[in-house]
Length: 111
Length: 115
Image (cartoon, rainbow over all chains, first blue to last red; front, top):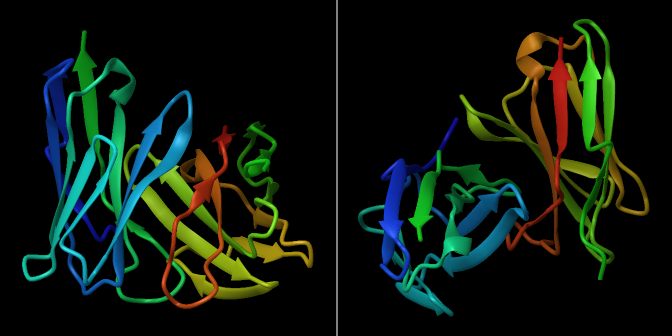
């Protein structure tokens, strides 16, 4: 079963614009992670945010976490063609030794 | 450091056959997880191993099994293949030792097609 739901399912923007994706989950968590998947590089970890953190930055990425609403958002600023990929959130569901994944947001960056 | 490697990369089998997939984690990583990815169900957790012990198992039938060797390499086996087993099987390794899951490093996957 899937823990998270990403919103939107698909997003198409112009290069240089910002992209925002949202993730909602159902149970308490220890941390939430964002991953990117494209055909060239497979599934790659982007950022991890712990349940006691509210915001985290990594380069052009900004992640927020609201545990009271059980939601997270991923912001990619100044998008590039290379950002075209599917983005997934994953949580540990508060339990051990597994990640539970959302359905993903498909992001297309138009040149 | 070499990344996670999976073999074979592509596999075609017929219904009723069995298949074994292999995963070599990043050197030093003792946790190995397996996932099934399909267009309809997305990414589904299969199982996780640490130091040759299965610590968690997802909701898959008993036809799906796995094991981990002393060098942390892992294999998963699917017996009596069904058409619905066609999927991308991903292996991931991690430094995770405690109950909290950390960053996962994924291999390229094995694309299994069942005819």
